[in-house]
Length: 270
Ligand code: BGC
Image 1 (cartoon, rainbow, N blue to C red):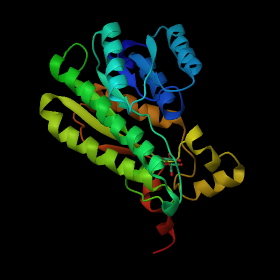
Image 2: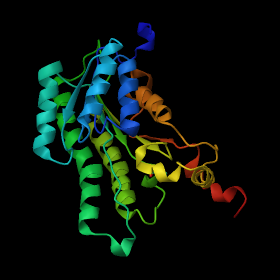
Image 3: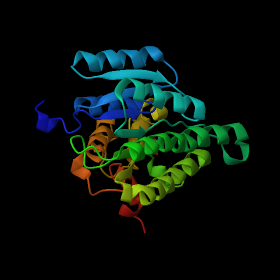
């Protein structure tokens, strides 16, 4: 890649939940765009380590760090380790998230709390640490026009209600307003905060929805563009939102969903 194709050269990125699914795709794409990448994970250390090796073997720089994003002490320790290794942070990707699905009347408080803690509180804890460092350090013009960039990975379910997944949809609705409010508060300090809301992307979180041809055909009924997405679809959007190519964009959500949010039932109905 030429330097023009490495829009994130020299920048330091932290991606949460980076050893699986969308997070892994984003981590690889940021590294390919020239960023050093901290691969945060919670389980499967061998996958995180093999990603580090893979990135190093292509001339990039990466480190793996285990931390539960819903635990304040672990989040602080993770940012401390990153600053010790690389001095600072330029890009935070809040990606870690999970589902614990249940019919509403059967949903336990543990299912509710776990999803809220990881999907929403985790974004708060990580964004706060990143913001403190962006504010301390300010703009470094050789690296980026902005003092820092935050990407909040949400879901189409931040606006599409989802029966059987009330905890998950509520957490993502929270992420949408969290992202906008932080963006509004920090824009004048040259910190950009944006969201990506993926539709149905082939990852382990929704395997049952695409793993058989019958399930995939049913899923495609909900997608006007008539294909299930892949992690690269999201990763390309993430590189753009993290780079100076999107310098005038803040407080926005990019729906990368093949049109899932376009009320596909109304193509014929209504
Ligand atoms: C969920 C997936 C689902 C997709 C579209 C995502 O946020 O995690 O399980 O397939 O939304 O409904």
